[in-house]
Length: 418
Image 1 (cartoon, rainbow, N blue to C red):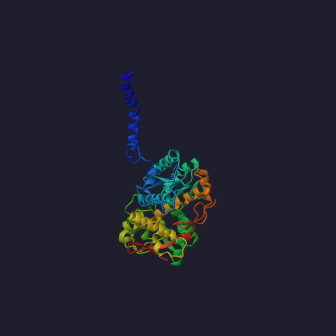
Image 2: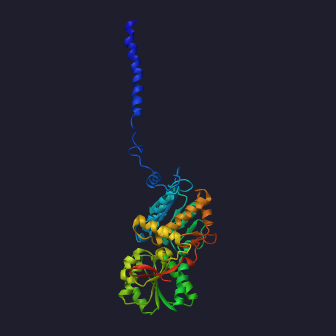
Image 3: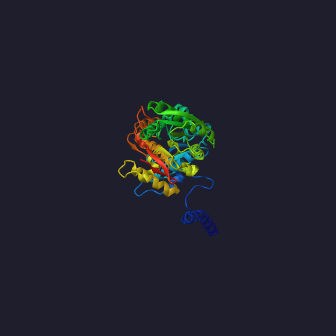
């Protein structure tokens, strides 16, 4: 029996050794937690990690609320899409810092349509079918918006467009809304200016795409009703850089003013062409050029150009008593603090469209697209950068011409001109 004791002790040691090792391992300092090697965090996790919470806010949790965004970040409409993308990213951070949407993190999934209608349709299908978004904001332009309208209607997913063509919301399409002031409202504002300045004969030039053609159609319809004659009209392709031929023809008609309808860079080339030809009559642009890119491209040829625009580009001159002033000020200052750039009209469109969608989700208490659509249509007195929105079953734009003010280029900057 004595000979068996060493074997019993060895057996006890064998049993206890793993326990001792495990206890010692558990006492070691733990490494920081995080994704395993090769495992990427989700966009929602990245956002939560990057966004500090505001004081008193509760961190959003659970599955992200997905909102799609289609902007022309590259291509001809990049001056529109780039600020829209920046604004959407800024708002996502702000919303998540305040606790998210329905207590969940907001995830804005941005797609670049490259200013191409086919790319826009593909982006919309991917956001709807793969990402399962509850709504889409954008696209930046009227052609790309009109291209995806059938996709949105068929999928029954709401769209809040950042483009201004009248045909986007007229006739009404159940799932399609828009935030910019329409070209019809802009024409109404222009008629006020022409009447006030006793201008009875004008000539027009427009980009040959759905935005320009829609504006030209509204000018033809409403100026004649106002007893203002259009002496002649010319068009240009969106890639044209020299409009000398068209402007020479219009100059020969001796109009009292030229009205141009397009988005940059074309309108800047029109301004340069008029300066080159010595055309000194007023140049009135559409609201599609209210950004820094026009000032940059037109340079000194842009001096004196007039246009109806939203208040965001001249927010500092807006009276403190105006209902939009707090929104304009807070957004403009936050945008400048983050990007060292001024927020323009198009950044404002992203602000308005995304905040209106978020408000609808909160009102519906749901991310089900049909319920979000119904809540969108009940949007009432929403104060945004473009104006005060009230959507109804008969009006999916929700603004009046009071959403416009006259702005003028002076000293290379936008100035309030009323």
